[in-house]
Length: 356
Image (cartoon, rainbow, N blue to C red; front, side):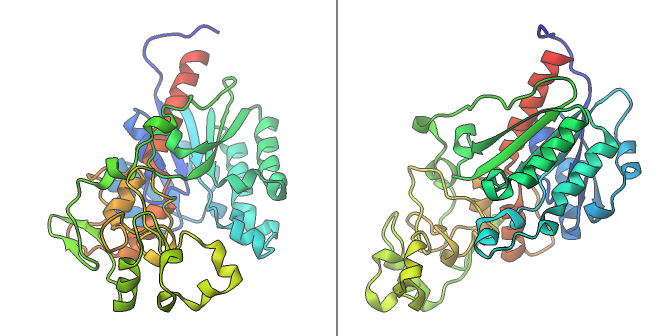
């Protein structure tokens, strides 16, 4: 089919497992109309509705029925059902602990159930790469078979986020499926020689001491350090980690053979590379390479949000509410980077221009 130029039909999205709305926001910024988001964490309501101008529905996805989704779509729209099922059951930690009970993976099966019931034109799913591994082929395979049996063309790829301008080394599996025809993710927009780096993202922010909050930006706040952890931070060179410390600063776990595999813990980032993957614990120095490149502290919640490509205008908390670093880290670490949402939206728009 030849590409048809001109106005696209209205593309409307319902976002399952929406969290604070990273995926929705990215898709919205590229012109898709976000109608609603479903999530089991009611504390996400403020951020989701404020930034996405869409309805937040507090509900367990296992109890959601098609009658609660279909009315959000207008009749002549292209209907998109999006979702990022919580990834903990698919993590490498779960594998190591032999947690292979498929009941743990039922959220993906619930997503498949809703696809069958709602019959959207397009489906997108984002998850950890481990879901495509040998140990979980049946889980992803069942989901793909469900889609194909309903008449969808399906593609999925493991995405290295720096290839799309996201300044962190996160890898994610992105699935696209459509009833209109074959659908693919757009090609990468960046190469190694022009990846967005830590310097590009946070070098212009006001410096902070450990435990300090920027008066002009409540989210630019970092955790306090004990005197011992401050000594450890001071002993960590640029790009270094606990492996560079003198003996008296080491934790007992670091002295054991098994502890040596966690080389990035208490590490500092480097200016010239993308940041590591942001997690729900990314504002603590003991949880990964989350130390500031040159300041003696862990990264702030604002810095973590920027690495996730949230704009500084994104509202995580009401103005009158104090910022909780624990909540902010959880919101940010669990989110789909908005930039990845933009990439998915651009892929959908390109697909519709080709097939509609």
